[in-house]
Image (tube, rainbow, N blue to C red; front, side, top):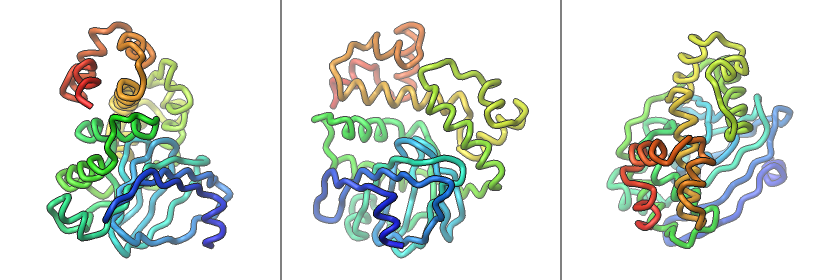
Length: 269
């Protein structure tokens, strides 16, 4: 099993320190690859950057989508499956239990296995994505501490959705990833999931924790925030690429998500 894991997964340690590390993990598993059981050796918080997969453990099961956090406690067994789509990419933060307790101010045990793409998490996720893009303004150690503390402040709930619902929402999430630069209508996404508009809205929010509109908007704003930190591109161009028709709407949405204007955000890191 270990050999299979190596072949289907590439991991690159970005930085590490005493009691923590951050690793860029790219998985190429697909529907034909059988999930295998693993175990979290330390406290684990993984930011899903791209792709989707099913995460199962003794704490339940959940669909992992871009912007969500995979949570793992030491000694917890788990498996990840790709029944409905191939590949994913995660930024995996690993903590020694004593370091995590010092950083987060809480015992290193999670009450849930997943946090959905929440507004409170957008700033730290955007900074992580900027670091992955090579931004020199990102301190991985500071980010690891912030992520640990913020995760423990947020109360999650188990999301044990039926596999049929996960399959349908996965199709919609994959369609969003493929067409993020296009207009993503509710009708088109519901058609992709093969659900009525009403049932699609309910199912999508149940599985992911946010509505389709919130999900798309949050992804675009996080990508825009990462570009602000990692590139010299002007704000207007970033706003237009993020799907906003004018700079005022973008500024308003960005401030609502991150608490500051795009310009202030760029200068603050």
